[in-house]
Amino acid sequence: MLVAKTVLTLALALIGWAHRSWIIPRLAGDSRGAGAGGSGQPVTSYGTSRLLWQLILVEVALMAAVVAVSAVLGRTSPPVPEELPDDASAARTLTGYDLPPEPGLAEYFTLWRIDWLWTAVVLLLAVWYVRAFLRVRRRGIAWPVMRTVSWLTGLGVLLWVTSGGPAVYGMVLFSGHMIQHMTLTMVVPIFLVLGSPVTLAMRALTSRTDGSRGPREWILWLVHSRWSRFVTHPIVACVNFAYSIIVFYYTPIFGFALEYHLGHVLMVAHFLITGYIFALVLIGRDPLPQRPPHFVRVIILLATMVFHAFFAIALMQAEQLIEASWFGNMGHGWFPAIQDQHNGAELMWGLGEIPAVVLGVIACIQWAKDDTREMKRVDREADRTGDADLEAYNRVFEEMAEHDARR
Image (cartoon, rainbow, N blue to C red):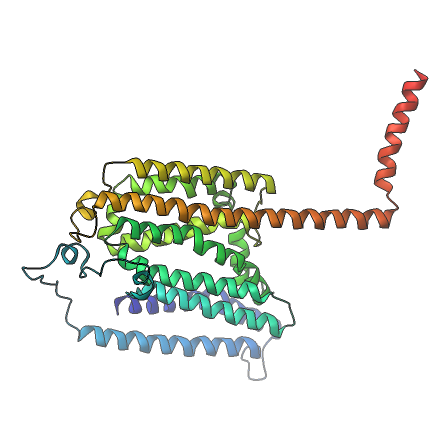
């Protein structure tokens, strides 16, 4: 309820900002352009007047919602800390949940603990993409269906990894956490990037002609901003993708993500965003401030694969338990915690290298397609100009040969 009230209040502030920065200047412009009416009052265009009343009605509705939420919040008792029983298990004490059953392949797909925040994110992104897809198709603009399928598949995997078995076992097992981590950073971004959401937004949203910035203008500004140029630089994307793993697992950040839900949310967001930027630089079709050549993309991918392999081998050979106060005290009795850590390192290697190979295949296919497209363009140019460039090139060598012969 506090979050709802905060969001509604911010929405009211945005409407107030829209009144001052958008509606009032348009009203003033209409008044100056139209002059005064017969009654001596300024004349306002129908479109501006209609928009003004729409904003007023939305503002009144939001005010009513804020009052309603405030009334309910005032009648709600504050949350009381949970009193754990004396015989509470170690898992219940550490995670707040009872220990799940011993993990197996089936349990990773049948056990669910809904994370409402990421469920809402998945639903909102799915609804937005489908609506944008339908709007583009209604305008007669072609949009590949497989991009929509790829986007929805990525969101489905994101829902599973944040609310399914990886989320349940990621709190009690290092191997479960590694499945969640690698799926977030290596699997989900591939499907999302292939969906090309920015390109779809550019085709679905309309441009504003009144000088103000709408969603389309803000997206274009973000794509071409200095911040975007920095984070999508190939070296920055590679370093952020690779070395954030070391920073996360060998600093107290890992413990913060395990102990606090806020840390867990930030962890999911970070791995998802870094993986998305990395995949976008390698195989994305959305606009970027700078896109590296194909051979640079392949080199970056190979370097990342080598780094993952060395990091996984180091984890498999390590005898010191990471976050021993957490995983070492879980008390599940299924297998030693250090063995589970070695299993997690093996999973990291497998779940990291297999998607990397897929990325490499997609990057090579795009490389071949772009080269074929460039060759066709050069052939068309040669046909149009009668191969003038080649003739000029050969003429230079003929003149050089004649000059040498004269000398």
